[in-house]
Length: 240
Image (cartoon, rainbow, N blue to C red; front, side, top):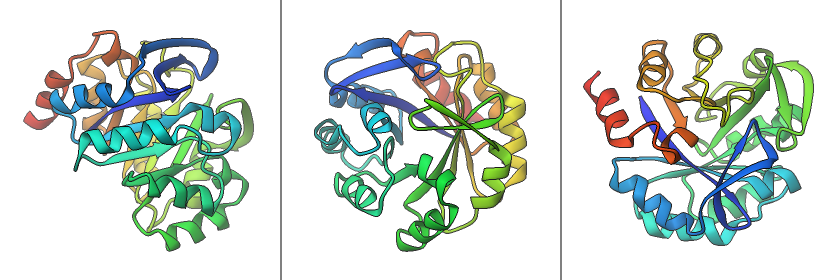
């Protein structure tokens, strides 16, 4: 299973939110590129980047920080989500050097557009599904729709999309453990790799996600606050 340390960007800084709430922000560093280098040194082989300003504004914003991260980590791939809602946005983000981009809000608004973009950029677009009580949240998690996460996944999840990143907002940043049951249900429902996000706090969370067929998991606050040691996480997954 692939482990993705998360680097969330706001105003060019490395931050973490609680449950996607922009008012509950903790700043963990003013140099996101240095943070990326730290995770690479600890064994990360893929990074998960989020443009929080972009998610809120609906357009890519933190390009300078993202380019600096990409330059700092060399050949280590990065995936980026946050505010990518047009083909031009996708081209801009890919132009910053990230390996793939994550589309969320626009996928709910227009699954046909998502399919078109996946064909145009094969293997370089992942579907981001952020859910609260099983319902899809959009616009930087500020709005909750009536469609369920599973329904959206079944509607959209087919190649050449590369993966689904499934986030349980209620767990995100709360250090309360991953919603393993919901993640396993999603992994069983679609033909694409599913990457779990939200609340991954312990080695047991990671192992249970692995055992339930998740292709990867994203870890944020637990790494930044020292609850999890990335070297130990990578070693545990590798040993299995």
